[in-house]
Amino acid sequence: MANTLDKIEVVTDYKHLQIREVTDTGGYHRRVLTSDMDVSGEVQEIQDKAEELWTDEVKSAWTTFQAEQEAKRSNT
Image 1 (cartoon, rainbow, N blue to C red):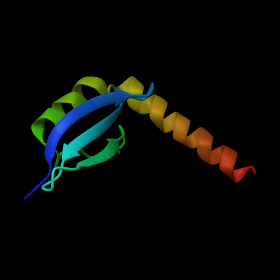
Image 2 (image 1 turned 30 degrees about the horizontal axis):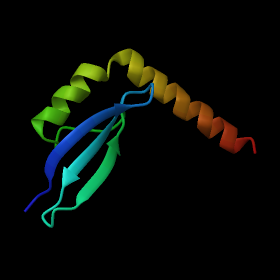
Image 3 (image 1 turned 180 degrees about the vertical axis):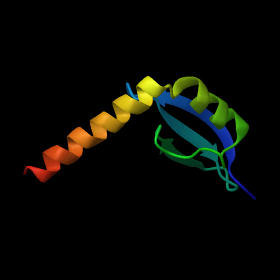
């Protein structure tokens, strides 16, 4: 049996989706989705939230941030 969606939280300026799911054993499983990820296989509620929040501006800002972080790592 699959995990059941329990909560979607929006975190960071980049509108990351922090997902909490309930496992078969009653525990929790948490994961984070970012705007550069494919959510087509996620439940509709997650897809809808991503479509609502992940504007081109948000996606561009996240891509820029990642590139800046990679440049910093390369320069050290």
